[in-house]
Length: 228
Image 1 (cartoon, rainbow, N blue to C red):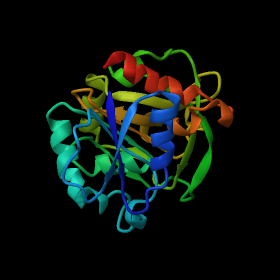
Image 2: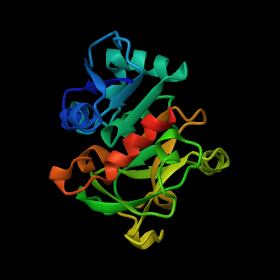
Image 3: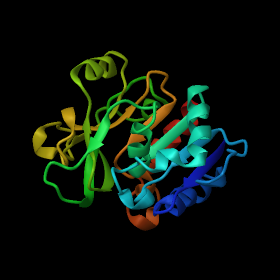
């Protein structure tokens, strides 16, 4: 599979994502610049974490106007695969590709630490290969990660099995006590109805190498490769 990793001004996890895909997973990766008008034949587009355009106005609000996003949106609407991590998730929620919004953390602080996740969706490629009873340790690093959507949108998200991940403790217990940012229902990631667009706040690419002491995140990418 050929992946494309987009770099925006302010991206800081683009090389982490490239290294994970190329080195840890042995995949072909095309580096894409935000001013490009061509996806260069990639099968799967990744919007990495960081602070695109300094997070001015609202995280992701300016990046959605970068020229490449027209191609990314068209790719996703055709059924092509797109994944947004952290700032990438924020960008996707500013487009028609994902529902909801990422608001300021409820404590109004930037949070950088390891948390635990449980996979919820049974039908998305990124979660199909995961153990739904296991808690996965993945880092977070964000100031605007509180997922919110109106009640009718939330009903649709649940009706269509679109919740990818929920925050939990290391034993897999889901409760507000283990919710780091105040997200509705402890939601850490969602997909679209078509299950080809993935957005998540935690950083699996930062937990995909034995040198980092954690390879839980690599399992997420392996699930994608096994189920697409």
